[in-house]
Length: 170
Length: 170
Image 1 (cartoon, rainbow over the protein chains, first blue to last red):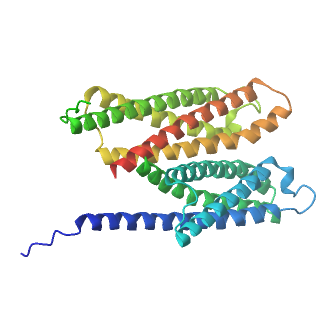
Image 2 (image 1 turned 180 degrees about the horizontal axis):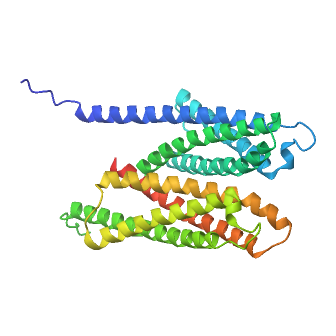
Image 3 (image 1 turned 90 degrees about the vertical axis):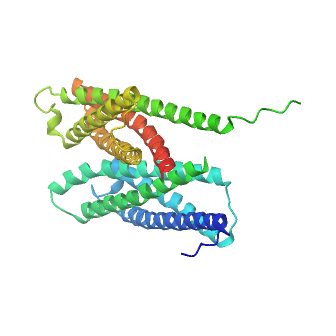
């Protein structure tokens, strides 16, 4: 057996840590990008869900809530994706690292709760309407709920990563 | 200036870490205890909410869901409180530390999502019923929703602590 050279062990450790942090950053960027995609679809589907008479989304507080949350999610994930792409391409951080970790975690976790709340709220109403038969209105509503739910799953995963980053900062 | 003695620095560090972990354990036990209290009230309020005719909780899927989640929360927080009290008094761990950290985090976070989902679902139904006037039935339903929401807040805080513990284990 030949003894291994003992040089550069600590720098390899630091490099591995950087690599891991970098891949975590890219992974959370991906998760937020997917959440942005689904929440945008959710927003467009619900905002265009006006078919006259009782088939207007703004007659129902549940659907208005769903729309409001999807707009808010699109704005939040849009800003986060923009910020992360900016940071990855230029290397300049907009926030200080600890501040960024807090904003990330509170934002992801809070919006994940809002998304599951708004999707849950709209389910029984849509269920009851579909008992009388499916229309374009109820189908769009169901699709919106599904998109919000997908968006929730990706933001909930992103919240776990942000929580991990936050606790490794403190 | 007198030089400080350099002995025992590392043991003080370890002691401080133990102290912090111990106080975190007590804090999370407290949070789960409060969540258990609120979810038990929520369960009892909803399970006894039968006043005949249309005023039975099991006529409404929203209220049945709320009841199911409050039972599940009571069982989960009850088991966790029992386990933590057992561990604090005897010093024996039922799970291995990493396993326990995963179970804690997944449990707290999952049930926090279930609680906010079920509370949100029941709000519009109760709102609509109360437009026709308040009765004992709608008042109990509102109280149940509030208790579930309190339970959610404490479990969401407990999930943050569990997440912190999990990431300090890995």
